[in-house]
Image (cartoon, rainbow over all chains, first blue to last red):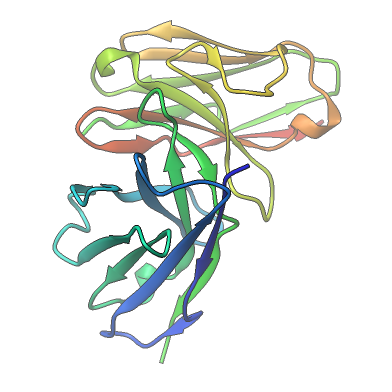
Length: 118
Length: 107
């Protein structure tokens, strides 16, 4: 059974960079698509973007200028960097793996809350 | 970018009743890339339905999806106590978007 676990700081200062890592167990990073999704407290889901195990990416246009993702196949991990954060970036951040048969999110991490505050 | 609208915002029903949730897209959803997720408090979403009407692995057959073009429906034939949750629709064009969600709560 594929399992995903997010890790990273729970508190980030405004204007700084949010960095999270997702560790995959029970399966390989390749040959799948991987994604980050966030959910502000009490609100809905927002897709941040996806990356393929080979490195190709596609990001939400509203976040594209601030997002970078990467994959480390040797560690079975992938990562998210979000620059110049503000309070609006406070959210539970989820990592997820795409369904093999289409652009749907089949396996999810438990989520990690990141608060942006000084 | 395709915008998804879900209605109603909240659906108050009793166990055993039928739930009908609507998802409307601002333009036609390409290749029928439409899915439904269930989310319970403190948990990650769970994929229920993909490709409009295909149940994901392990999803009971009381959940069914239908629709085409811009109008889609998730139906729960008989609500079980564990079905009270928030439901999101999701589409993929050149970008992935979610609807705002419908909360199904106990009447």
